[in-house]
Amino acid sequence: MFSYAGKSNLLQKIFIIVAIASGSIILTISIIIFIYFKRKQFLEDKKIEEMIRSYSTHTPKQYSYSHLKKITNSFMDKLGQGGFSTVYKGKLQDGQDVAVKLLNESTENGQDFMNEVVSVTKTSHVNIATLLGFCYEQSKRALVYEYMSNGSLDKYIFQRDLQVKNGVELSLSTLYNIVIGVGRGLEYLHCHCNTRILHFDIKPHNILLDNNFCPKISDFGLAKQCMAKESHVSMTGMKGTVGFMAPEVIFRHLGRVSHKSDVYSYGMLVLEMLGEKKCPNEEMGQSSEEYFPDWIYNKLTQHEIDGGSYSWGDTKEEEEMARKMIIVGLHCIQTLPDNRPSMTNVVAMLEGSVDVLQIPPKPYFFGPPTTDLLQGVAASSSSNSY
Image (cartoon, rainbow, N blue to C red):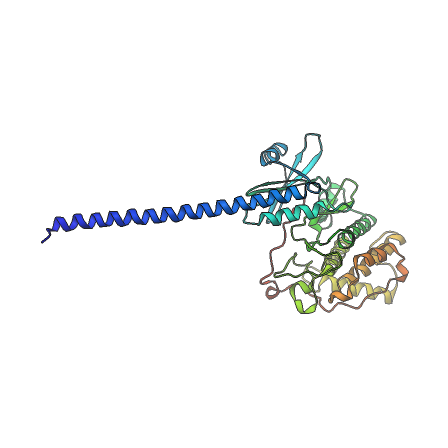
């Protein structure tokens, strides 16, 4: 018979053997997992390198992360921040100011990142922000854009107190020129690229202004490409920003998601610009539940009955600009995609005579988004206003 001490020693030996075996198994599994992910990262990096080489004539300059730290003074001057990225001001060696958009570290597919780089690089238009370079070092990803000295449109149409304080309130004619510029930029994306580019996040935060207040569309993080002869895309989720998102992006039975979804966002952008210029809440009252596009439609039709001034502009020319923008905006936010004009027709209406424009039917999808409606809506792209 074994003594108590002998049994105890045997149990200790068995425990040690089991512990060593378990530790070895865990270590082996850990090594296998480590090798798997390192190999996956290696293969992904190889794909990115091959993509860079294949688009060598199209992609902008590639920067190292250390170089971006240098040109931004270790990311000292923050221009704006959103949910997925932060934008910093930098200066290249030749003295050119740039905006460095540093993406948050995530599990985002590197190939998707490069697809975005390539798609934006393929664009060349006065109303599209110019991509000057990029950085891709495993989890470190960044985009280097031309610097827009007047920042983004949102601070000029939403922050009225700041406008008055700084003496930079935009005139109606300037807003009108911005509307036309954004329209031309969208028309270019939809019609004049080798592949149609659908932006899916047109809003004031993503419209940048240069020193002459020339608008440039930016932030293609949600953009989708489709064949030149097609206009619709397949989507498994919802893309965009609440308030500017087309109804069919949420309710697919209303129609196919297409370039007309950008048209809707553009129409809301135009009406927001006019609404903030007029500051409707002063007239409606802060507690009013009337939805803004509904308010502006009623104001337009009432004017057609009563006549008189729109009270948006100081001159007859500005009044005509305001009427154009209202009617075009209302055409763009029609509930069904097929009832909205193309961006080519939008630009033609804005540049044509106001006398030939007809007021569209009142869209029946009026009303701010409800809590139930917003459940499951995908997060919007970052708002990197600066």
